[in-house]
Image (cartoon, rainbow, N blue to C red; front, side, top):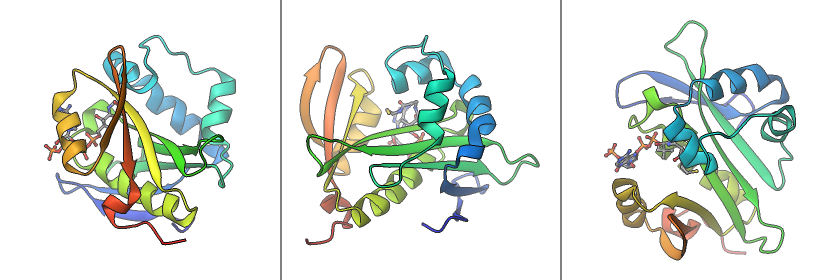
Length: 179
Ligand SMILES: CC(C)(COP(=O)(O)OP(=O)(O)OC[C@H]1O[C@@H](n2cnc3c(N)ncnc32)[C@H](O)[C@@H]1OP(=O)(O)O)[C@@H](O)C(=O)NCCC(=O)NCCS
């Protein structure tokens, strides 16, 4: 993805810009984080009391692009172009073919296709870094999302308490290059 990003049209007709996250994005990130519901916070961080410390803000916004990729989405239909979603993957040191995936879309923007857009863009970037699989976890009670992911080619890996661990072969979305 170019540094300037790409524009996408959502199911409601609004345009968003998806681009790499930069270290200057701390305020955008913090503002978006503050408007997340406790439910979304719980699903993203496994805790609804997760605190975004300065250290975490650095971690989320100062990105080492070889092992860590972070994309943000901005709402172009609003004058102040707020940050509305973030997707990232981090390569696993022990298993470099795998990267852990996490996507967060602000509550009022969910079900408009942003999660899917970020997922596909992250797949493309991961492919260029020879990553073969994404791994991620979701809460077992999220049946609708689970079914959607399984239909798209996710594979069940394990279950730890209420969390289901899934892996997603990038070949399933037709982006994996042969080595
Ligand atoms: C999970 C999440 C990223 C999905 O983002 P999104 O932008 O809403 O996803 P999409 O609009 O692309 O939805 C794709 C499909 O997933 C399924 N889906 C997504 N959210 C769902 C929900 N709450 N209930 C049932 N199905 C759901 C649907 O099949 C949906 O397609 P549809 O809307 O055409 O029916 C978003 O809900 C979120 O940020 N949640 C909080 C954080 C989180 O759980 N992150 C994932 C773990 S890191």
